[in-house]
Length: 192
Image (cartoon, rainbow, N blue to C red; front, side, top):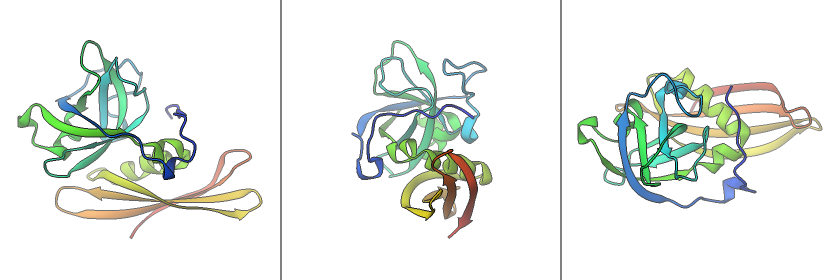
């Protein structure tokens, strides 16, 4: 598993990061990335950011095509030198969610996804959901609740919104873990 990064958000599901305007291009990736995370990670829902960007390896971004409202959740796997900080280079599969690759350069809006980033188990469930639905792409997510189950167990619930271009699904992910040891007691996903 790739490292979990703490980006300094305190109560992330109540805090929204700044949305940036920029452009996106696409690539089929390569064998080696500067982050050491393969382009195939998370079903190719991956992106390279400018080396001048504040985004870091392993961080999750939410990218939106403002012209049609389509969204993609991607993971930073590489950096590109000498490009503006607001330029993204998406893997072709992620770009296809937003627009036809023949567009070439696409105006986009993007932001860090602290809700999933900060909520460790949200990112874990995002990866499980994306793997369980390989022909679908997670386009959005929402934190539902965090509740104590016992003195040594906490349950967290997230909803993930998926599409394959023709069908949309909502999948609820649930994890029960021990906050003292950070070990998973159980987890599951269910279509709603």
